[in-house]
Length: 264
Image 1 (cartoon, rainbow, N blue to C red):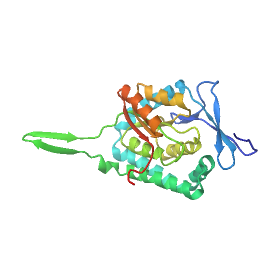
Image 2: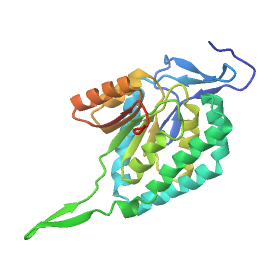
Image 3: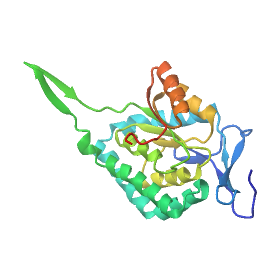
Image 4: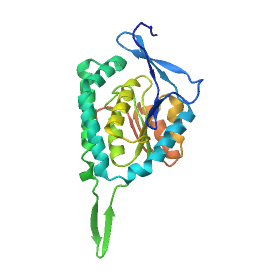
């Protein structure tokens, strides 16, 4: 249950090919974005269709050749600019997390800081991705190298609106992949701000895209033939379903469920 107030209500759109865009269908529905501490609606998030998924994946696929041809160093330089922008806008991002997720400001600032640690790690990938050459036998050598796959879909939950998306986005991007992100429909506004910061950092149109929605979008991303890999974070039952659906399509998948400490 929610109540409306006189405060400004944001309409949350997709971000496709470098632009914030409404859904392809004029008949698309929307859901309210609720501030858990007040029960007020602070926004409305559009529910995308398969057409929106197709548009986002097409943009990511078209951007992949030029992005992947850049050196790792060049891609990391763009990510380093994003890292700096996150530090500059950390309080603004945290305040958005407070509004749509319900964390207190201290916890929200920690959410941003921990996510930005992964961004910082991704900036070191020019050294970590150098690969190696092993002499495995007489006159036999093996070369180990990292090549980008293509379009990667990232499906993330509501509990850490900034940190969890950063488990995938910075590493996938610096390694040369392009991204279609599906945030939780409960907390879609933080990632809208992140898309603006990524654009300001210099990520070209199509390299990173955002599609709002629910189950239909998730299934559309998993099933799309141009999506080469999927990352998912959420509950264990849904992680199992995502993993099985990806593997049945011979698609790479990292599905994290439960989120419990591995040591007791």
